[in-house]
Image (cartoon, rainbow, N blue to C red; front, side):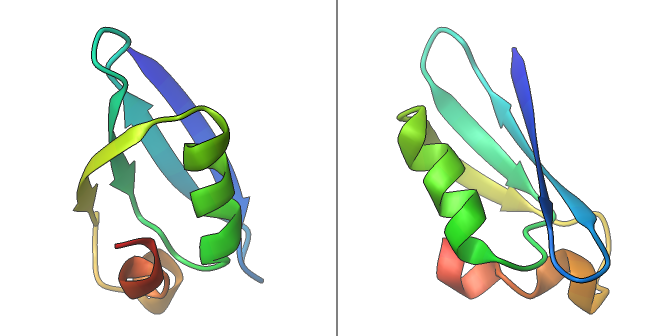
Length: 69
Protein backbone atom coordinates (compact mmCIF):
# COMPACT_ATOMS: atom_id res chain seq x y z
CA UNK A 1 0.00 0.00 0.00
CA UNK A 2 1.15 3.50 -0.87
CA UNK A 3 -0.20 6.56 0.95
CA UNK A 4 0.33 9.97 -0.62
CA UNK A 5 -0.66 13.21 1.13
CA UNK A 6 -1.62 16.31 -0.82
CA UNK A 7 -2.00 19.44 1.32
CA UNK A 8 -4.69 21.71 -0.12
CA UNK A 9 -6.68 24.83 0.49
CA UNK A 10 -6.42 27.84 2.79
CA UNK A 11 -6.82 25.62 5.86
CA UNK A 12 -4.00 23.32 4.69
CA UNK A 13 -6.23 20.24 4.79
CA UNK A 14 -4.73 16.82 4.10
CA UNK A 15 -6.10 14.90 1.14
CA UNK A 16 -4.96 11.28 1.21
CA UNK A 17 -4.48 9.06 -1.81
CA UNK A 18 -4.25 5.41 -0.80
CA UNK A 19 -2.97 3.14 -3.55
CA UNK A 20 -2.81 -0.62 -4.07
CA UNK A 21 0.73 -1.35 -5.28
CA UNK A 22 -0.43 -4.38 -7.28
CA UNK A 23 -3.21 -2.73 -9.28
CA UNK A 24 -2.33 0.99 -9.01
CA UNK A 25 -5.99 1.60 -8.07
CA UNK A 26 -6.53 4.32 -5.50
CA UNK A 27 -8.97 5.82 -3.05
CA UNK A 28 -9.04 9.60 -2.64
CA UNK A 29 -9.91 10.65 0.90
CA UNK A 30 -11.16 14.17 1.73
CA UNK A 31 -10.58 16.08 -1.53
CA UNK A 32 -11.07 19.48 0.05
CA UNK A 33 -9.75 22.07 -2.40
CA UNK A 34 -7.28 22.66 -5.23
CA UNK A 35 -8.56 19.81 -7.35
CA UNK A 36 -5.77 20.49 -9.86
CA UNK A 37 -3.14 19.53 -7.25
CA UNK A 38 -4.98 16.31 -6.44
CA UNK A 39 -5.52 15.39 -10.09
CA UNK A 40 -1.89 16.17 -10.95
CA UNK A 41 -0.71 13.87 -8.18
CA UNK A 42 -2.93 11.04 -9.44
CA UNK A 43 -1.93 11.52 -13.07
CA UNK A 44 1.79 11.93 -12.40
CA UNK A 45 1.94 8.47 -10.78
CA UNK A 46 -0.65 6.96 -13.15
CA UNK A 47 -2.92 5.95 -10.28
CA UNK A 48 -6.35 4.59 -11.20
CA UNK A 49 -9.05 6.27 -9.08
CA UNK A 50 -11.76 3.91 -7.85
CA UNK A 51 -13.41 5.70 -4.92
CA UNK A 52 -13.71 9.04 -3.18
CA UNK A 53 -14.29 8.88 0.57
CA UNK A 54 -15.02 11.65 3.04
CA UNK A 55 -14.40 11.51 6.75
CA UNK A 56 -17.04 14.20 7.34
CA UNK A 57 -18.95 16.91 5.48
CA UNK A 58 -17.09 20.13 6.25
CA UNK A 59 -16.26 22.28 3.22
CA UNK A 60 -12.51 21.88 3.69
CA UNK A 61 -12.91 18.12 3.18
CA UNK A 62 -15.49 18.10 0.37
CA UNK A 63 -15.08 21.15 -1.91
CA UNK A 64 -13.14 19.39 -4.68
CA UNK A 65 -15.29 16.26 -4.97
CA UNK A 66 -17.01 17.19 -8.23
CA UNK A 67 -13.83 18.25 -9.98
CA UNK A 68 -11.87 15.19 -8.85
CA UNK A 69 -14.73 12.87 -9.80
